[in-house]
Each structure stands twice: as C-alpha cells, then as structure tokens.
Length: 316
Image (cartoon, rainbow, N blue to C red; front, side, top):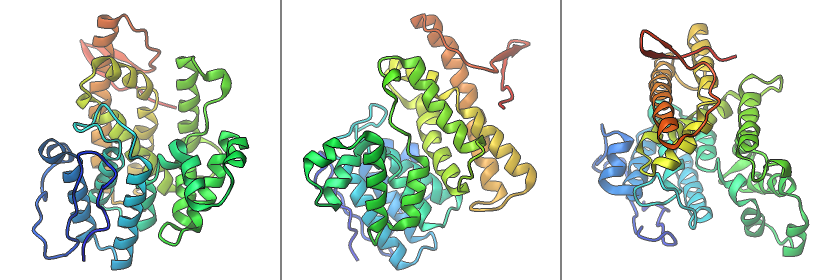
C-alpha cells in the first residue's frame, strides 16, 4: 500500500514511501540528526513511516497516523523553522514523533497528538475553515481562545483523529498570549513557563501522555537547539527553554524513583532523562557564552559553578 503522504504542497518535497513491512529499512540505527542531515524532511518522513510499520501498530492505526501526518503537513505547509536544514516546520513534529516511537510509545492517540501538537495553537482558524461551514466573519468574531476550543472540538469529530487525540492536543496547546504580554518578551516567557509548570506540577489533573508529548516537543526544541545555525536565535531560544527543562528533569527523576512503567519503560525514561540533563548542561554553557557575546541578560535559576564546573540545580 502506498503512503498517503505526498507533500505536494510543500516546496522541495516530492516524497512517498511504501508502507510495507518488507521494505528495506533505510534509516534503521541512524539518529534523527543523521537522517535529517542526509535527506532532510523527506528522510525524516520515511524514517517515521518505517518506525510505525515496525512499531506494533495495527494497519488501521498506521493509516490513521499517516492521514494525520498529511493533515499536519498541509496545516504547516507555509510555516518555516530556521533550525531545519530545509526550513520546513513539519520537520519538528516528525522528529518528535520519531523520538516517541523509538522510546517505545505504542499508543496511536499519543503519536497523532504529537504530530498535531502545534496545529491548534498555530492554525485554529484554518482547522475551523477546513472542517466546518462557519462563515469567515463569525470565525473572525471569535476570540483566539474560542477559536482554539472550536478547533479542538472539530478535530475530535474527525474519524481518523478522534476525541482522545483531540483531548491530548488541547492539553499541550499553549493558550493565546495575553494582550499585556505582546511586545514584552519577559512577560511572554513567563506566560509560557507558567503553562508548562501547570501541566507538570499544577493541581489540575493532566493525562500522563500529555506530559510526555510536551517533553518530546521540548526535547526537540530545547535539547536540539545546538543545531540552530542562527546564533542570535539560538540565544533567544535558550533564554526561553532554560526555565522549563528543569520541570522535565524533576518529573523524570520522580518517575524513575517510583518505578512507573506507564507509556514507556524505566529504561526509556532514563534515556530521556540523560538527554535532558546533557542538553541542560549545554544550554547553560551557551547562555554564559552568548550573554558575554551579545550582552544579553538571563534570569535562569539554579545555575551554579563549583570547582569551575557547571552543575544542575534542583527545580521546584
């Protein structure tokens, strides 16, 4: 059976893999970074398809996941990221989805939600236009938050997506930036950090799958930020994500201590924890370097030196 993914609307992408268990595994054993450097976003797509074919998903789940990837590709077709070699935004959710499958996540709703995790935040209006007959003037009259809520509801009604996936997307979607935060980066970062803190340590009960979706999103954003070629952009992102990496480190440490095996194994949790710890160390070093180079001030907690070595702090 041929893949549903064609990327016809994305520039420089004309790729369709064969979804067949007997197909040669081109990317088995290669890291996400190696795959992207070799073949760009088409290579990532092929690697993702290979991973779901060999990942114990049913044929129906495979079809649904590929249809969701097609939807995400179309929603993000005009979006760009400067940390992707070919500049295509869709590379980000694909990288996160590959990480998820390689860590052992076999819940189809979680994989679909990873692929769609930025869709409501960035394209709520497009989702409403795609799945409803709501007049443009009525959509425009909605507040940004109302548009997000309507988009989530519509996604949940789509058979290949489902309410479970839509609920997960809703839990990891960042709320619209308050008016008083616009134009003020410090306030915007504080607003973002508050939402991550609520997901991981707030009193509100959140699905553990949503927590892993957010972690994998941030793993790709923050831990792979060393691949961002634009040094000023890299410094800007480091200043944002340095405030949240600690939430993930503490969460994973607690999960490992408790022996929780839900969704992924203890070994996979340890692998993810080691990646976050190493990435946090690199982030702190870059912040120190860039603060000197650009005279940028950062308010980063728990950054300490002892015997000339940077150490991880404890996050509450």
